Amino acid sequence: MDLRHGVRSASSLPRSGGHALPAFQQAEVLDSDEYFRVVIRVRPPLDRELASPVWQHVVSVPGSTQICLYETVPEMNAADRASGTSQVVNTHSFSFDHVYDQNASQPTVYESTARTSVMSALQGYNATIVAYGPTSTGKT
Image (cartoon, rainbow, N blue to C red; front, side, top):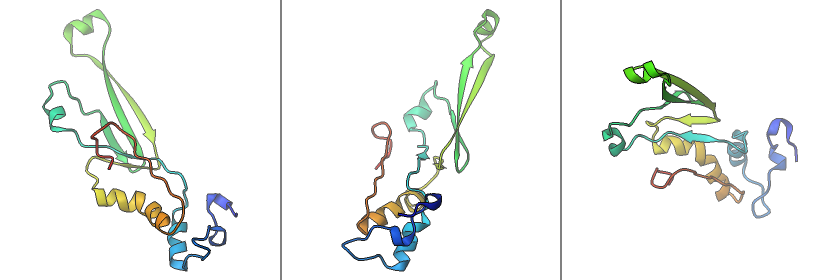
């Protein structure tokens, strides 16, 4: 198996049922030069979250590979606690292979994330997609 730059050559791809894949299908499998990717999708807030007086929007997607979480922490000295107005904002940025914001559609996520794996599986290759998150958050 040729693993130059993490990409298998067409000749080293496994064969399905003893037959090589047609060239156009090999190209589709090879177009994805990554065999392990971490993709994040930010879900839209629920109506009950938006209606809550304590809900805060703490997530932003500044680009297609980065997500930022904003943590608001009240000041801890007596004067600031008394005024209730001073806050410290901590920003946590994380990078992934791809990040979808809350406006991303199902077809967009499928086409650019799962389609290659599904097509490979239909051709006899092993493929795994793991969706992780709390119950009822749209992993299906």
